[in-house]
Image (cartoon, rainbow, N blue to C red):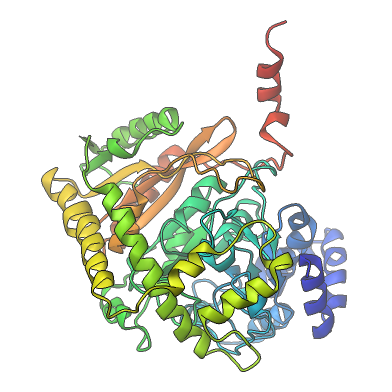
Length: 523
């Protein structure tokens, strides 16, 4: 099943193919009415987003499917006399492991879930709609949120194919929220939703040169989101600016009786947009995670630190942090155990049209459909998870306690207290690597984002420049429930630095004039 087939099928089934086909003509006339409609009406914004998807995304593969009811929803919003919400008329894409009402399935990129049409809005989606947003469609992702194989290629799924980096098409765009990151970078929409377990928002945001925010776990509901780990999973915004991320978070955050982790969310949430300040760095003591630097990002990171100093931040070097390796190994044990338990519970809630009801069923499905599901890599993580003994297993409980302690109380919290700082900064991840069907992901290295992921603490990445034309991001980490502070610190840096790169859609970095001149030398 190709992406073009999926898009065409959904539009034809809905009877919206004509509206989709005619949309470009309506905006090519260039009249004042058309321009005003595009700018001021929900339907105009939605049609313009759909047009951009059709025109641009054929090169990128970031969108799995467009919701054929999106334009009708937008027109209904235009006719409504209700007060306009903070996201009124804004077209938003969501990752295809998040459920939404309507005809689109929630597939997590797998053909096993191609009939998973649940008729349910995830609470976070319902909140976005209440704020006035129009959910235009679903983005591609690393299949099963990159938790199927240790040899995976980020951004590939059997349903959506391979997503490509908008800055250089032969480069990977990281995962698992690959499509959301690329769609925003390419300007298909300005706002998208990703999900993160360990780097799946912040890595693709950094590599695509956009803003990505992983909130405190428990601030945003995970109900009706295909899970990996109830200890670490969280949805979050992926946007062009920090202000847009703050606006999305304000809409998405809140308690959900079906998700016990969110019991404090209503008490903790705030107006994240109002809390932004372009003077928030002044006088703040910020810890510089020197132990998490390198991997080709030294020059833009040094420039970022100078910007922080100019904005009045007091920078404190932190050279060492022990135990990072143990955090990773213990956390992986947690993910294996929780994935089996949480996924089986999710699959049990899906409609009868979904034939795979357990992880064991999925493993069998992939074997039976290896030509389409496993042409590039296998499912060793699935198989390892299936062997786990459940959430009552003492080894699982020990691993969870150890990983959280090392990342949280003895990790971020200890670093903040010992160095008398309010937040931590470091490079998010290396610049994008090549898409490699032979060797899989060739991950060159990353910062300390796993500390925030395992602890469940907030992590923001903001564009900090480029490495040979490819974007890289600056990470801001803080303690639990410090979401407003972290967003505001990142906002101040963003306003002072203005480092977001517009994508050039070149075939390869080697095709850019700068690199070509270097290759040719001085002869």
